[in-house]
Every structure is written in C-alpha cells, then in structure tokens.
Length: 97
Image (cartoon, rainbow, N blue to C red; front, top):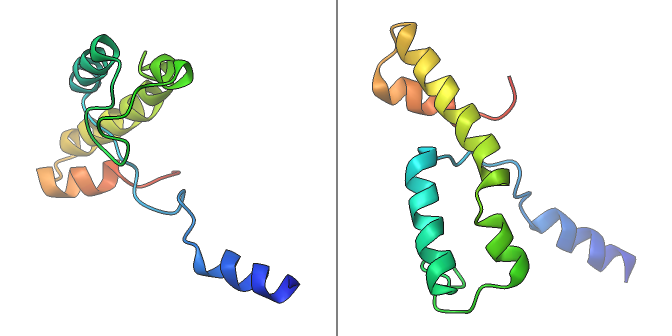
C-alpha cells in the first residue's frame, strides 16, 4: 500500500512548479468584482457554482495582488532593460529570482 501512495505522489505534478500566472491588477480586480456581485464563479473549473465565503474573500484581491504586482514589476523592469515584449512576458512568469 505504501508503494501505491509513492507512485501516486510521483505521478501528480506539483502545482507550484509551473510558470507564474499574473495579470494586470486592475483587470483582475474588475473580474473579481463581477464575481462577488454575482456570487457565482464566472470562469475556471467551478464556473456556474456559488462562491463560498472564503472564495469571496480571496476575490478581494489581496492575496492575488502579491503575485500580480511581482509579475508586473518584473515585466516593466525587463522592458526598461531593452527586452522585447515576448522576452519580458517570459521573464515575468518565472518564479523566484
């Protein structure tokens, strides 16, 4: 049974290994405001389902804003260094340093 759990854990990809997903904070906030008013998920896996109190709190944007601001900062910094928009977008999605 322990071997089964080990192979299951190895097969699952780590959700933190992918690229950083960020958007312009104002655009995300607008979408979150629409979701909070409707009290329903507007996109994603839970589309059409009701928001829980916790999810509505997340929609306030506080937690997501941290990643958005980091991504936007990296994007603008790369552009100021003379990178192309495509290169800057790639850099802004890298996690860590």
